[in-house]
Amino acid sequence: MMRRRGRPGLVGMAARTAVVAGTATAVSGAVAGHQQDKANQAYEAQAYEAQQQQAAMDAAAAQAVANAQAAAPPPPAAPAGGGSDLMAQLNQLGTLHAQGILSDEEFAAAKAKLLS
Image 1 (tube, rainbow, N blue to C red):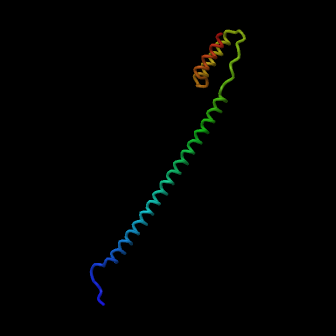
Image 2: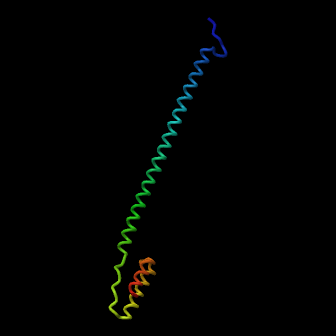
Image 3: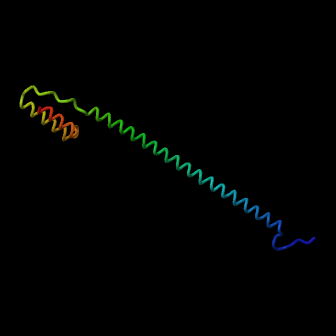
């Protein structure tokens, strides 16, 4: 029997096409799977980072509230009637306001209370 030399026959061509198509499908599926895995890992990393930032912001806010409560001075005592005592208290209020311990509103309220 004689064998054909040269190009493959119809069955050989169909077999080769099937192998190429199957390989391409397998490779494309693997590439898509790897891309999906990378996207999932990136999403999880971003979600974890956002969670850590939120926890840090919550801790900073709690610390700021605690510091504000601890730094708030008790209201100044009412003057006993001495003029120099009033000046000393006004100077103390001015110092607290300049240091940033008293806000503008707190300073104005305390000054009005002393002067009334």
